[in-house]
Length: 363
Image 1 (cartoon, rainbow, N blue to C red):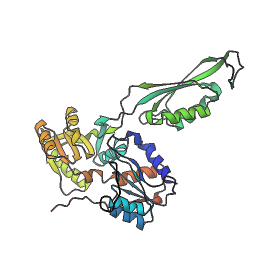
Image 2: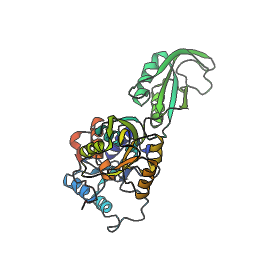
Image 3: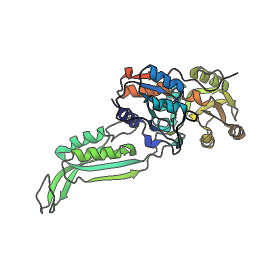
Image 4: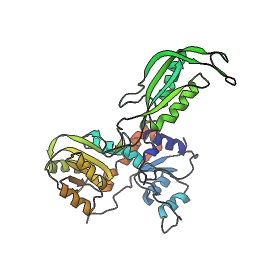
C-alpha cells in the first residue's frame, strides 16, 4: 500500500474537494509513490508526534490540522522546526481537516454520537451538487452497466445503495461514415430494444460513474444524460440535533465533561436553562452563532469563542459551552482510525498517537 493509496482512501469517504476555501487538506509533504510502513494518526504535526513516528518506524503521519496552512517562503529551524524535522527524516504527511469535518460520519458525527446527540441536519449544508444520471443500454447488457456504475458510486440515497429506475424502450440510430457500430450497418437506421437506467450521483462520483459506464457499455458512442437536481445535502458544517430528553443545562454540562474528559468548561448563559435542541461544531464554531440562533437551538457546543462572540451570544440569548478547540477535536485520532480500518486498511499498520495534549495548562 502506497502513500497515494491512503490519500485516495481518505478521499473516498471524505472528499478533499469538500474542504473550505481557507483550508489546505491533502498531502502536505512526501512521496505519493512510497510504500507505507506504518501510519501514525494524530491531531497535529508536533515534535512529539514526529518522534512517535520515528520510534515506531512509521513513514506516514495523518493529521487533522494541516502542517501547512499558508504559502511558505522558506522552511527553517527557527520558523518551521517540526516541518523541517519531518522532511529531514523522510516522513510523509497527509492532513484531513475540514473535508473530514464536513463529511458524513466525520468528526462532528463521531462526537455527537459520543454525547448522545441525534443528528437532524448540518448547521450549514455542503455545497456539493447531486446529479441525475441516465444512460441507454441494450437489454442484454443492462445488468453489466448497472453493476459498474453502482460500484463507481451511483445510486446512493441516504442509507440505501444501488437505487435506480429502469424502463424499456426502443433506441434508434444510423451509423455514418467512419463509425464502427457494435450493432447495425453503416447508412442504415437501426432499432434496438434498450433499457434506460436512471440513478442519482454525487458530484464527487460523477466522473468515475461516467468512466465506468463508458468502459462497460457496448456502444462506440453511448448516449447519456447528466443534469443537476435540487437536493438538500446531508453533509456540511457542524450539526444540529436533539438530546434524548430535555435537561437542565448544568446537568448536561456535567455529562459533556464526563464524556469528553474535561476538568472545566466555559459557559455563556443564554435565554433558557433547559435544553433539548443542540448544535455542535468541533474546532472553532464562533462564526456559526448567528446561523445556530436562527435555527432556534438551545445550546451550541464548540471551542475558541472570543470575548466579543461571547458578548453577542449572551445578548441574543444563545447558550454556548466552550470546551476548547483541542477537546472538541481530540477524537479525530480514534474516529479516523476506525474509518480507515472499516474501509480495509490493516489495523496493525495504524498507530494512534498518544502524545497529543492541549497546549493550554490550567494553573
